[in-house]
Length: 149
Ligand SMILES: [Zn+2]
Image (cartoon, rainbow, N blue to C red; front, side, top):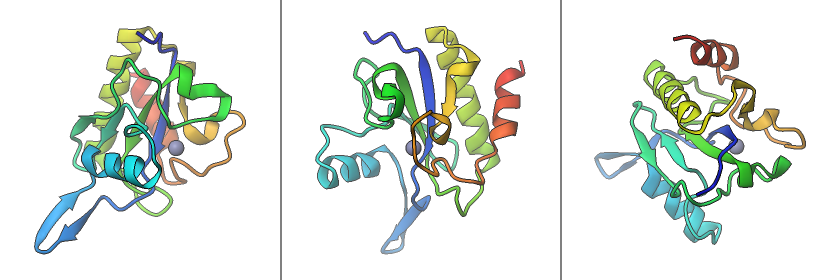
């Protein structure tokens, strides 16, 4: 088992879903897995969790395996990767999605005894050079909600 010491928050930098004929296909862990495995040649989806736009939470890479989400600061080896589906350079995080992400981070912090200071947005990791999770990710509100209750 990996001794997780932190959590890194990402966005998928993608739409929330797409139309397949007349069916709306939300971007979920299967879709992201396909991108990461087929297009990037990885062994599996890079994130441990995906938070869908409607607030559903899906498991990605098994928790006993290091991730492929944050090279900077070697966070892949020490931190769980959580990805919120959407592109928050352009879109906002829906209330359902934000509260699901907060709940998940709270649960993981308890489970692994992760300090609040070790919950980082991807672009806050020293050495990272990314816009992820996007300028409209509500950083302050997220931290405030994490701190409450
Ligand atoms: Zn990221």
